Length: 606
Image (tube, rainbow, N blue to C red; front, top):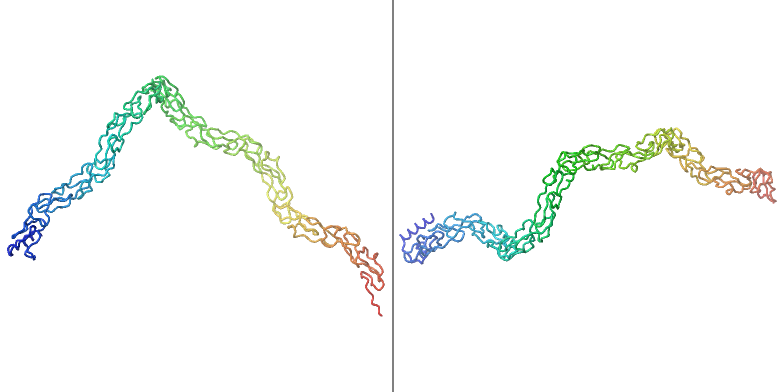
């Protein structure tokens, strides 16, 4: 519509206006100040007085720009564009990745695939050279990435990289091109056991019985001894290995061939003749002929034996302490833990059939069976023991065992007695319960009594309280199973209470005339000399005695001071030992009314 409108305007301008003189590429336009305007894309003008813009006639794959000066003033479309020619413009292509639009295309469907060594991302993109590394090349068509389709050149071919293709190499005999080679002589020697004629030929492994050293152009026959064959690969004539089981070899470059043996036999490794045969080991059998021992297929619980000629018929049931998983397994020792044993015939489990040895029996484990113990008297063997003597345990108090396989049984002690641990008889080893403990007898151990504080139970008690008696003077007990202990009174004091409950709380000071060393000792009579007496709290029978004061007399021993009975005019001195015998006349100027009164100064008048 735009082009039609322009043509109509052009016609009207030519009809109603005076033609202007325009330069090439411009046509008359009365609406402008110059009377000319640039021809639009698809039109041209040669210029002049009667110039008008006329349609171009471009070939396919090209277009005319605005201001064209003649009918064929056309330009090829840019890469990735197409045009149907005439007055048409160039349109961008919409090719798929791996395709491009060729130059001069006139159809949106003219996309063609990229050739080997090129790639395209599609749309208006043209095919560009791939960017493979040296030693790599892209032979893929329709590539969409510069490197994704690059592949390493195979051995015998090389590539310089980018878009070049892999080409044959020119290696010397005994060598071959390496993978990813980037030059025609990037070659390496053939490894041991392979050879090559060179050029692009790969290194070919030698056939069995032949060898080649690195860089050799051809393989040579080996020189192995009889019963041996050449290793593959091999670089020397004597690199040999013994023939496998069931085969033999005469040596040289000969390979190993099948041997022929009787049933139950096979040809061992390194055989030199077809009849060099030996007995098949347990777990295998041979029906004869092919000299190979095949795996047996024994049932579970049945073990394979050596020299079998049948895979099932020659299997034997496993004895107790042994098992077999079947198939090719022989009878193997069970894996019972120490103290356990398996007594099952035809067992197929290594440890699931293991049972705990009963009391009095032991097992070392594995395939060992439960065996009687040899315990000493007073001991027993518990369940699951692994040794017949070292695993014996001492019978607990109140139990006994004569030893051997016997279990610990209850003792039968009389009341007030109990058996210690390790007794070997029901009664012979019963011992009396110590003080503060009791037992009703039988298998009962000695238990703590429950005496009240200040009392205790003597040895041999049969109940918790029936023999509880108060502690004697000088002793105390906290009760329960506590026995009577000596009190801890200080010197000069005693605990005279019966049934004391504390070491010191019941202690009292000794009275006049008595002494005590303390502890549990009681207060005893002092041994003071006449004229002296012991003070309260004395700690020694003589050392703590003091002289009696005047007016008092002390008879000695444990006697306490008493008042004297002197007649009037007399008085007793200190250290008196009698009520009257020690009285003496008062001195001149003194007097005494007698009795225990001392002599005092007189108060005569002047």
